[in-house]
Image (cartoon, rainbow, N blue to C red; front, side, top):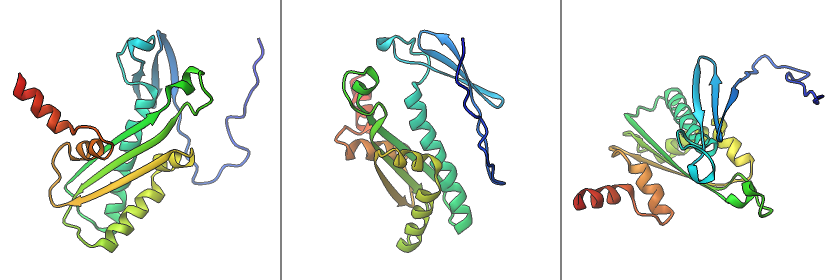
Length: 193
């Protein structure tokens, strides 16, 4: 069996290049063990599509990675701009058309829309500094830029408040997209139990 070999190192390497490596080992039934540096995690699919539902899907990992990436950038930019914050909540709702993956329609298999809520607990109330802060985060976050460059319709909403309640970003994201807020669902479930 022959295989086409693709170069793994570009012809030119810059002094600031960083290589990120990951290894995947298929475990069967749509499950993969991924190794990155000294860490490992599993990726799976729901039972309905042939998986075992023992781990998040690859696309769920992408959405989660974006939340983690933006949090790192928020912390870095806040440090540089000397902005103090005491809590940070992020929440994503990404939508994809499953017909793309299934091959039943000529549509993109990845996200076609993405909403990201970022809630920062801070005393910062200067609108100009808030704009500078959010602009730098948008420009510098690798994951945000990957999603935008892919042509995904991405909406990012920021909230700056002196108090950020746990779950506030999730509730705001759900409300913006016409879903019931999680706190209302949790309260209703608790009341009926």
